[in-house]
Amino acid sequence: MNIVDTATDIGRRYCPLGVAHTTTPADFRSKPDQLFGPHDLAAAGIVGSRTGLHRALKRGRLPAPMRLASGRLVWYGRTISAYLDGLEHAAGERRAATNRTCEMQVTV
View: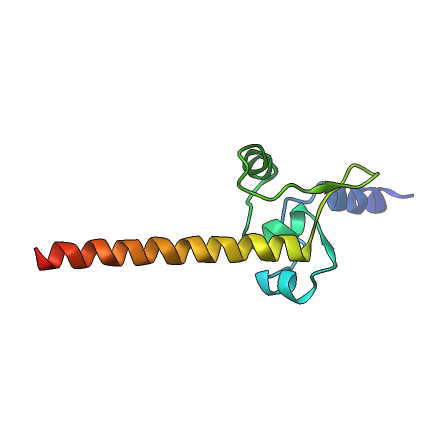
């Protein structure tokens, strides 16, 4: 192995989250049985860094991942899709509550 191959290999191993992936939220819905890793979550904008990922997991803001025998964290597409649906539902409820509050302030 020459120096160029080593540098390329190191670049692949230490790639920042989301850099080399083009996963979108629609991919989770269209591929429910596929496994997705932290890089896919970052590419879709769900997490921004490894630290953010671990904080969200510790605080229960992300669904629990599966750990493969290699130690890699993965989620099924259906798990992330359900998580995103829950976020959209919660955001809709917050908007509705805000609209009710604004209407009450206007009528007073």
